[in-house]
Image (cartoon, rainbow, N blue to C red; front, top):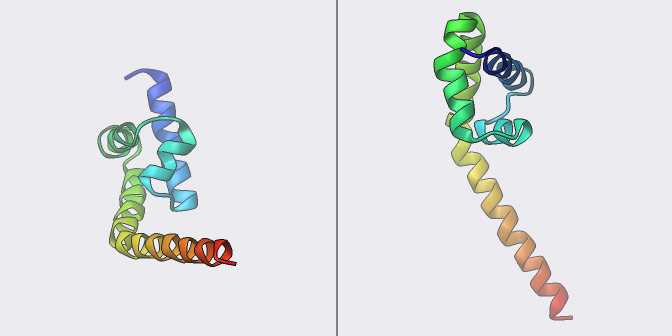
Length: 91
């Protein structure tokens, strides 16, 4: 494996662990695709650093279990903002 890929996988792992970020947030931060982040943490990281891989897996499972809540909050905010915009334009 290339050095820069190993380095990126470790940096991604550290970021996810320290911030408890989602794959999507991590991909945006590092300028790579969600697929790349996922491959780094599920395939490459266990070979490089098994304890870090376990911790990342824990964070990602937590995020997965909470995603329906985040989705609901985002939808609520979307409609709340649309309603507020509608009220302002009716004045």
